[in-house]
Amino acid sequence: MFCAASRNEAGAGRLDVGRTPRYLPMLMALKGILWLVIAALPATAESGDAVPHQLPEVVARVNEVAITRAQLEVRIAQSRSMNPALFDAMGEEEKTRAIVRVLNGMIQRELEVQEAHRQGVTVSGEEVDRELAGLETFYANKGGLKQALADFKITPGQWKEETRRNLLIQKLEESQLSRLPVSEDEIRREFLQNFWKEKQPPSPKDLDDHREHMRFVVQQRRWTQQQRKEWMRLLADAAKIWRWTPDAGAGKKEP
Image (cartoon, rainbow, N blue to C red; front, side, top):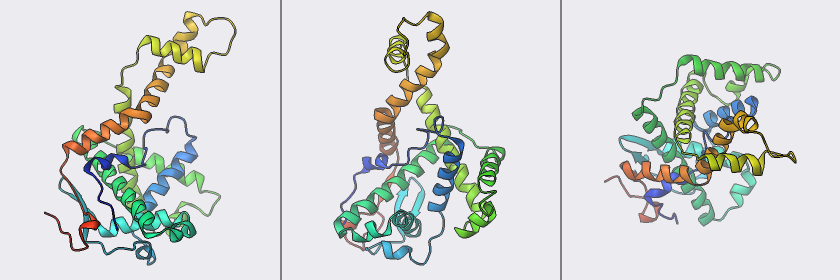
């Protein structure tokens, strides 16, 4: 049977948007965005086969926004498609835990989009178009982007909307990360321990030239290892979250 997920598990998803864009090559980032878009769009006829439980029409609600059974089934089907044999070989309990993780990730994503709107984060049409142009370049010798989208049954409009949400989350997390305080001692220690390879001590100019990069490295490590989880917990605590708990019975309804 399903294990009821606690409210704070909304921050336990694995969608680490904002963690790596500055380090990833552009093409990897673009391919990742396309995958996120694919995972959010209408399911194939096989999607229901990956869900071994009877789900209600609405499986979660984040403040006033509903997450539907259809949306969850899409994400589960896309997760299964990465390794169908492994997914199908899971026992019911293990498969249940995987489905709960998927739902937690969807709740986390919605929490972040809502927080981005609350903080006034915006994404322009030009920013979305730049992402589209990058994908068009990547798929130029692979049959073209239109064919790639058609293969996944995704319309350009659907792709643009999900890309807009992805960029909202990325901007939000980058903003939160940039606010983390870093002392001069931490900057110097990071530089000496992990970057400076010369035998002689660095000059003040050497450190000055790399100060902002060292600051970002320390912030990123702190964000990914601890602060992001705590921040997501606070978002979840401040929100009104209802989620279906399958172990309470398939007939469980919203309060």
